[in-house]
Each structure stands twice: as structure tokens, then as C-alpha cells.
Length: 197
Length: 197
Image (tube, rainbow over all chains, first blue to last red; front, side):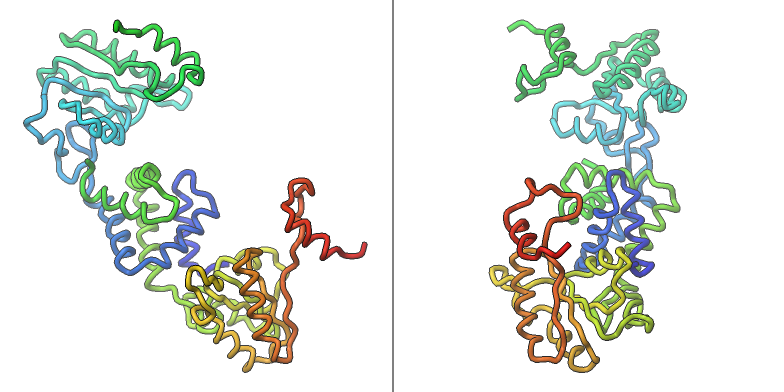
């Protein structure tokens, strides 16, 4: 229907999850109509993403160098490691400007039904860090899902033999939400974890 | 927050309309995790889009050569021109496998509130084609909007001085829809354009 070059671009956009035929077509038309400069920047950005970005050797964050900005930052607390599922979770936690420790990216969660077992995640390297660094606390920041829960419990057990504190993010009502719209499990957690005023 | 190269990629994705910060971030992570081959194809496709695709000299369709596939195809009817707003409308009409004539892309519609006047559209070249080719029918296939309507009426008037038939797509109830959900204007058009059984 369209020229081959254009079909190839549509096809590429369709590889992004959640992008259907119509949206891919729309994106392709937009790129076609972009100013040369915008377009050039896009080409460069995609090119450089694969050539210039790697996983941080220590924590698994994305980085332009061997160690990421956070691991290289000596002013940050070396005794606390926050374990996250994905790189993007680091960005979310960094945005609140509260946490000053290190991170460790698992690159997923244990999911037996999808065949993702502990060995498929960056768990061995976490244990190595716990052994080698003088870690005092590991904060487990999994998503509050069944798989996140499973992974958190697994890590808790695994790390229990080391002399450190293992904590997790609190579950409860999100700020700004309404009690009557909260699901039962959230409400249960909020009740269980109630704090004194 | 992220390495600069990655921020640049997110920024590029955000330039696509309807793509917010979260979605752009998600797309960027997906590209980062793509196989080398998929990624290379994307880079090439975007690169080639600007360097290899042009507007067809005759009808305004996108094309890898001076004339598009449709204009080059001598088996198609040279006496009928279907006038559309955008290139993507050609794809939509081609999909029904019914129309065998030529196309002409206006690249927009008359929209006085946005300052888009007839001179801003590919209307002069349409008149040229009507004069030079032996055109027997011009089918006006604008979107059924106020601007589309305005443009259709304008073209109808402009072409009335030439010895040809000017037609338009029918308005009415879409197939599979329900009368009680149809808007009043559509229902009015469906009644006006009723056909004998």
C-alpha cells in the first residue's frame, strides 16, 4: 500500500507494545512531517541508545560508563541497597529526593508460570555485593503484586543469613485516595500497618 | 535522572502527539531492550523516511520515486480523480479494493479559523490536472466535518466550469451501527440520501 520504506517504519513502531496498526501509521506520518532537526535528533538518539548505553557493572542501572552516576557518587550512603525490579523504578524513587543509598536492579521478578526463576534475575550479584560491601540494610522495593511479593519473600529468606536489616516499602492507602474506592487487600494492609497518631 | 543519551531518546518520543512522559519512557526502555536486528531496522527506517520518501509530483501521495505507484500504474483509470485530505486516506480507500482511478492529495482542508485558505492546499495542481488530463469525474472524499464540507463545496464550485462530473462520498449510517446511537446530523443525512429497495 505505502512505499516499502514507509511500511518498514510503520512496522518498527508496531514493535512497541501497545502500539497498534493505526497508531504506528500515525507515528510514521508524524516522523515524515518532522523538521529535519527533530528527525536527526531522533535518529541519533535511537542509534546511540544501543551503542552508548550499557548496564552498570555493579547495580544494573543504565549508564554511559562502566559504573552508573549513582554508583560513582561517593557522597551517597554505601551501606544501604534498595532492590528494584526495573531500571525505571530507580527514576521513580530518585524523584522523591529522599533516598541517598545504592540500588540493585533485579531485571524482573520471580514468575514461575512464565518460567522466570531466581537464577534468571540479578540475585547472585546482589548476594555478592552484600558479602563484599559493608551493607547494613537492604530495602526491598518490589511492586505490590503477587510476583513482587514472592520475590520479596525469597530475597528476605536468602538475605536472612547475613548480618543486616532487610526492610520493604510500606503498603497502604495511596495519598489522595478514598477509602471506599480502595480494594480490600489495600485496606487490609492499611489497617494492619496502622501507625500511632 | 537517566543518562543523557537516554533522556534524548525519551525527548524524541515525546515529540509524537499523544505521547506523554510515561509512555515515552516506556517506549525508550523497549527500544533499549530490543534485539540488535529490530533496533537496526528502526534506525534505518527512520533514516530512510526522510531521505528516500518524497511527495509524488503528480498527486501528492508519498513515494520513493518521482511518481507514486498509483500514478505509474497504467492499468488504472486515468479519467477519474479521487480528492482526499491526507495521504493516509488513500490507504483507507485502497484497502476496500474497489476504486481503480487516480488520487489527488490536498494536504489539509480549508479552515479559516486556523488561517488555512485554498491557496495553502494542493488545489491549483488539481485544476491543472483537470485541464490537462481528460478527466471525466472528480470524487471529493473529504472527511464529514465542517471543514471537509467547506472544502468540498469550494472544490465543487471551482470545478463546475469544467466539463466533468463532480461527486462526493455518501453520508449516512455506518454499517453495524444503531439508529438510536446515531447523531442527529448523520440520521438526517441518512434520511435525505435514502435509496430505493
